[in-house]
Image (cartoon, rainbow, N blue to C red):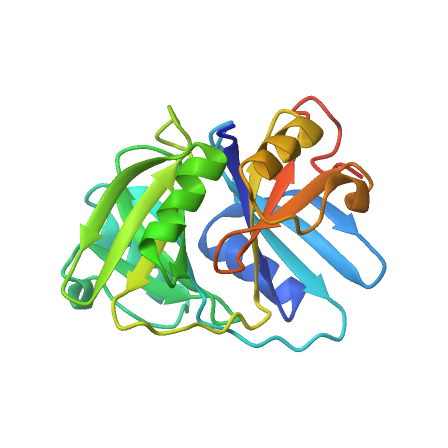
Length: 262
């Protein structure tokens, strides 16, 4: 089992403010929407995103106050090679707050924040639509356990790493993934710190072929039994990694009228 990373979910305090931010500054469009009892879910992404590109899911729960934790780090979006500074200046001209400009990041990347304080990294790539999701970074407390989870449980490959004096970044993605697919960045700090989840960070979602068969595979590989398919009306399921990050398993029919399994 090496399902594609389908989306990353974050929670937002004001739905319209967040929609305006992502559609205005990252040129995202609304792919689909689900209005539930007291909550709204919206899928967003570039108009010309790759068929296996990941979407951003923003969830708004009515009356909920959100608190950022530090267990999740950021989403990263792509701009073409050589366009980092121009893309950052474009965002500044549009009124986005200056957070970490390219110069402060050695000219290799930059960061902005969305209205809820979620960090958005800007990276240069020669593939994928502009502003498409490149990776999602989560923080882990044991690098060996984190890598083992994704490699053993999901059959992912480690495709890159950066080991510095005080921390290391490890990138994992599905075996034979297209360049346009999203990866997971596992960040490990050497000082033994622990992390707070808050409630603004939601989950990663892996798109799989059969929710029941793939769930059984995960159980055989000793993944945490968090929310099995039966408890989710046989539409999806959830496991957790070794640190408690939630991971959704979802079947999706590309030919269906709705992106949601409801």
